[in-house]
Image 1 (cartoon, rainbow, N blue to C red):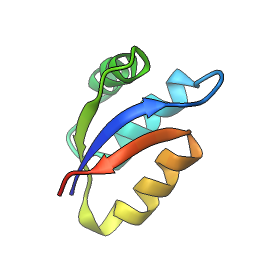
Image 2: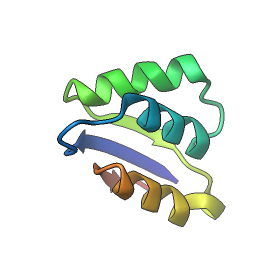
Image 3: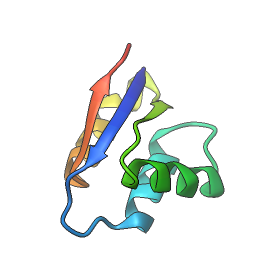
Length: 74
């Protein structure tokens, strides 16, 4: 399943927690790429990631917990 991460509405977003979440929910993303995607997201640009279908419910819950707005692409 593809997800488009739109923005982070947290007052003080936790960069480390967001990068860790992206790395855990998306296969093939290493730590440096997760940090780069986190920076892009926090600057206000959308980020596309791939999530395993079997882990999609827990991935979406983790994103909501971090105040990340997303849309499901497919």
